[in-house]
Image (tube, rainbow, N blue to C red; front, side, top):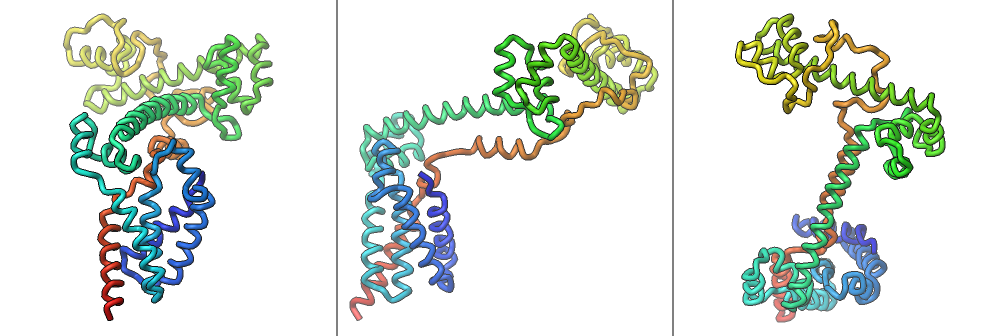
Length: 357
């Protein structure tokens, strides 16, 4: 049921109406005709498809209310008064149908539901309190499920990002990665095999089952880990130097204790606890440091990762994630119809005054 384009047409004309710009009148009529045709194609005749997909609920009523109101307004300004009155009268009936009784709203809110939840549920169920309760429960269950799925998807995306990109700038195929892990290969090892083979499962499997190429991949992964460790140590040294300590003393302290906290205690002359304890900076304590530590230029070119840089933002992936985290299937139908109600009354009054002339 794809109704995005018809909804966009209606929203565009609604903007014309809110701006009170009747210069767009002819275009508004064309857009509304296309919207009605598109909605019937998507929703089925008399919204039968919506009823089926939404288990008998009525999410589409506010949308059709707005459509009929706008059709009535366009007809009025085109001097088609009978057509305008018919459209506005139908819109008014839908408006009254969407009015939520205060006692029903209070009852649902007393059960612990929010006002927004209660109003939406009562409108979706034509004011049936019991079905409204069921609707809210189902919506909460779906929301919790989406939340869990979003969290899992976010974890997968961040994990995928950690593995870097293939030479052709593609992300590692997580499904094929799972298949290789299922066969007994370590995840980092399998991911690197897929990355360097453009996600070709068979080629990656060949490399993983070949002792020579497998050993080469393992050495490469180990070099990446060492690179990240050295980068962490370099960052710690630069941070301590920026605090005013002499670089040679900082390098010596970090080499001896491995962590920022312990090195800082030593530099400040405070008692130093067990140097085998690591801190929250994630730098392994007592890490082996060579004489070149303390400068990022000491990194060998062979350690450079051909995939994505550790600090580089993957904007495309982040945008995809954001889109996935902001979904609400009923948001386009959950319209607050107060302004529509005022407009219906206004134009019906104008039609009444014309009829008296």
